[in-house]
Image (tube, rainbow, N blue to C red; front, top):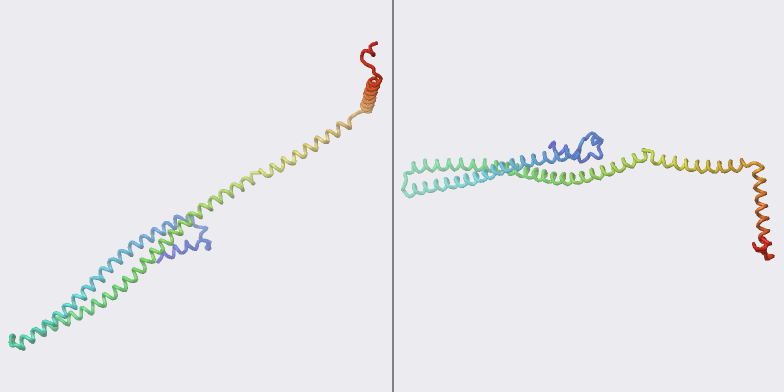
Length: 239
């Protein structure tokens, strides 16, 4: 059936480059399942009709079998009556022959209806197999559809996450951080350079003054210590 071939192609989509041309494999699978259900309805309807014909053929066969036996019994009764003198021999023979002709016609109908019933039984068996196959395929593809929907959700979520990660990287955030680090390092180096320049701009006078001031400060400190050792106080100093 065409629908089986179509669904088979969908099932093999992962290994077939044709999947790239599918706009929506889920919708295609759903449509395939709907087509299968329509096929199932038609097959079940045909199965019911053929089963009805098969039943009728069997009933006809039984009916013609009964008729053949009835005509056979009638022919025997007529001949017995003739044998008893209840019926003229010629008339009995005529009627018996007619009964036997009817019997033969009934037997032919039995043969015909038997052949017809056997053919119909074969068709019923084939249709029942087809119906069962369609049901199995519907169950299979409904299960496949659930799996496909779940995989689509996962793939979409993964794609969105990867896209976000890619956009995050492409936005220059990482590069911006690297530039900021370089800027900080550059600023630190620049500050150190300015410090070196500040130290290098001192004149000789500045250095002398710094040295003198340092010596005077040391002398003042030594004098204060010496006075403290000798017991000098602020009062003695004033005297």
